[in-house]
Image 1 (cartoon, rainbow, N blue to C red):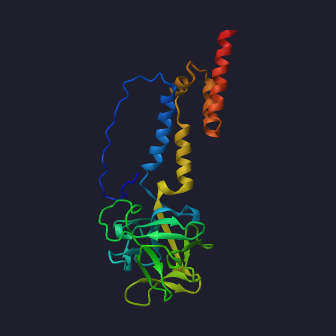
Image 2 (cartoon, rainbow, N blue to C red):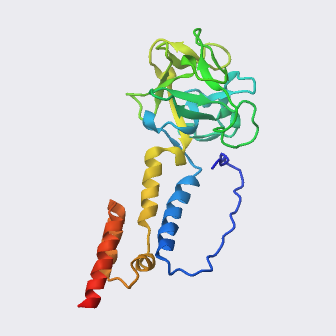
Image 3 (cartoon, one colour):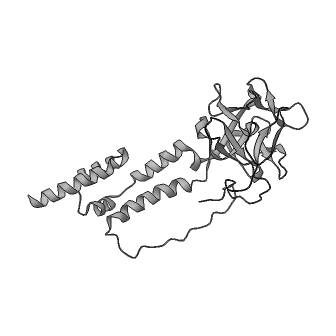
Length: 277
């Protein structure tokens, strides 16, 4: 489901809660409840985090640049690429940067069958909806090293390769298919980003900030923790009888380790045998 981007200062809408009037005797209710908690936990996380490895880079991102003051790559409605000052940042630390303007946001997607990534711009949209389903255009770099976001289809020029920096954790050097790198150029009065750097340097090292709910490892970890949170009452509803402390511990451990359903069956069978004895 498409959801809006969250920016600092935006008011969050409150969700209405509905009560289940049919009771809680059905064991499937407990399973659905905990699975929904896991899904909601990951989908509603609108915080921004740093990508650590190239495989993290997916969904809405910003390119935080090593400039003073801190800036990021942005584009206007005509596809012109420029640097935009970052307002949502703590003491100039790029590891805390968040966008305040939709023009600063790009949506990253893996180019099928390759390690390259495409970056989709907003193309004139003024709302904060995810750009994933919009008719937008891609960030590209031509043979002269000039960046733009004017093409609606992905070609070699719109396929960029994020390479994790060996010197600075959680930063990347962005390589084009011409084996050049995106770099900050501060030779002029205004800061600009070009794609014709021959070698990796401080000016080619960018930090990529992304929405936490799209980060694969973080998403998996949060879903796993949410699944672990199951109460004794829910377990007893699933099994259909009261449980001892040892049985509760066993089932919670099985839920963490992935053999939850097998453990449930074992406990149910044990309960039937105890009744027959």
